[in-house]
Image (tube, rainbow, N blue to C red; front, side, top):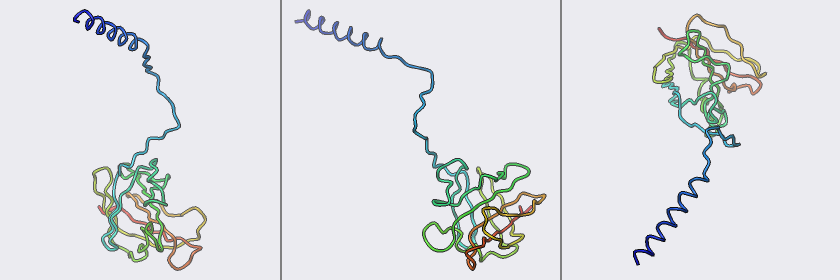
Length: 169
């Protein structure tokens, strides 16, 4: 009985060693069509006047999409940089993704909080205007950190509302 058990254990050990020796582990990366989706937020915009508090996602995240969230435009320079210009866009109107629906209620000197990578930046509304919707927005570069907010005009579907803010220092 013991001899038979030892024989079986020897065979099992042999099979285990043999199967391990055929496993090949490559240090080369395996490229697939799978994309790693990161939903981790990098910040938050808070506009108390219009009861807005929304997460912001990395510029390369699939969550940084105007059809899902407030979007950081690719031309943005984060507030961690000296020449910072954060440009945020979102829908207005009706529906669950109309995060900038009440943006037109902002007035000069209103305050906006931007939390970015665990640091708080406070901006003050400096200028508000509308311009034609053509895929571009125009604004003057300031000597301070800037925050630009844009959405569709609430009164003219051919225009966009633009709110330019500067860091409150």
